[in-house]
Length: 590
Ligand SMILES: [Zn+2]
Image (cartoon, rainbow, N blue to C red; front, side, top):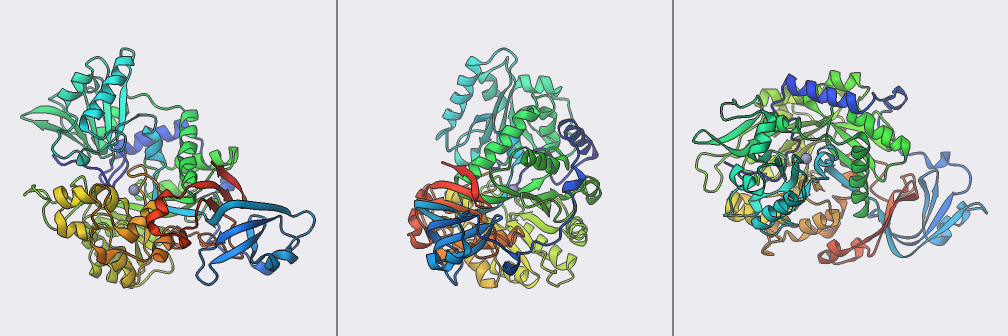
């Protein structure tokens, strides 16, 4: 079978959602979180930048230091005045002099470099929190396949009888030549403890005999709707695919308490802040607990301000009625948690060989992946979101999926650029210049999972899609040349959240495994790569009040060990973060 790793997401909902699953998700949601308080849900329309003349009185705070503004017009400053969380003056010390009085606090950033808070335009809070306490079975932590098995065995040795042994982030595409985690291998780890290990992409789960027993699944059990129980000669292999099947196991595994979920969500946000992020897009909201996820984020923020601002992308398959009746409408929320986008999943994962390709995968003469829906269904979901006023984010990895999605956008939008809705294609992994030209014409922009090149570039080139398609991966230069505004994302927890590493990869296109440059023609200048994690990423999440440090914008910034705008891109991934601030107040510190 094919194995996955990259792009798509939730184990609980995918392109073939059933009423059954929705019912389970809704009941989980109601059990765990209360409905969204009405006070938080009134739509506020587009973000506007406050009129500078409307600001009266002295600044609350003046920050002195080496400031990189991210604005090409005036890239450097030495002082920034902040009032009510907004920048009211920035420039030389004398530029901000008249904005202070005796009550103004003075902050010196010392030897740190102040930069705009970084923007992560596509990551996953909810599917990550579900499994983030599970054993780390990633290739980063486990250099060999045997390391994964040994880690599971060590855990089994200390487990009490009947305890679940759960793993996450297992990525067989990074162990070429090794087997999958089959039921035989996992039964050798333990026969008494149920075992479930999630693939990094969350599209596959690997289980042992005890887990099958607890889930009530035998060799005679038919494949559940929207899922697959992989078999060989009629025997279950232990590999379980897609949400319809994975949910059968999730239903019998221990559920994390509300307190654990809340703590886990904040941990993930702190992780984002620790790499300089102050705003991020949750890219499949509703996938784990339905519309209640938005309410839960508001409640967390009400209890204590979150360490990052969250922009959510509502799962389209839940339907607009479900979102509207939960009070979640386009641009509803507040500056910390805002509902902005409408998420559609058109295909699978590139590394997982389920992304929908024009041609077959290397060594698999029958397999070219598959779409999650046909073009009519895609157009219908797009129209539903567009007409309701949502920004649309459509996941498409393979070139055939991108063919379909670009055509679907053209038809859904009737060939015209929409009124500033900034529709997107997510990952847009194997695309050609012609795709980007058509996208630019109708105002659709790509967001790239740049770590495809760094972490998987070698295996994609040599084992999965071959050199030609690998060279087209994450074509940032072609997108820019066509007139798109591309951004870079991690798809966390599919890959590590490290915006400065993503930016470095956009400039260098070096793979981690052999340091080869994957198509130098797609390398972009340093300035363009940094825009893709700051101002353009802010634009792509409809946060025009962020992304650069300028008068009228929010005082969201990070203090770094070096200024990336003035450093060699080779060094960007080594830059450390001292602290991040939101509205000028500390959100995270090292
Ligand atoms: Zn994603």
